[in-house]
Image 1 (tube, rainbow, N blue to C red):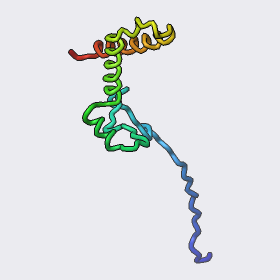
Image 2: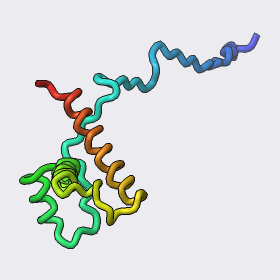
Image 3: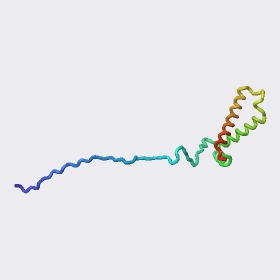
Image 4: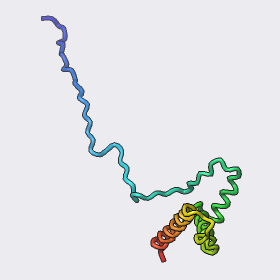
Length: 117
């Protein structure tokens, strides 16, 4: 008998990766669906004077408000001058004015229906 130590063969270790996923790796859920919040979202574009536009937005109001003021003023002029009764306008030109007045009226109705008062 030899005095050699006994050689033991170790079993090879096999590693099997287990991927357990109990929850999604990314979960996003809007708190208020269909709502958007923007702190400031006005594209001043290539204005010749962005400071003037910014001041107008702050002091007068949004572009929608400014257009609304113009629309109401033009509506008043059309009615006071009785422009739709003018013989100088073609039927197509009168149609353009009537479409405009219809839009102004529709916006007024929308405002009234959404007004909190």
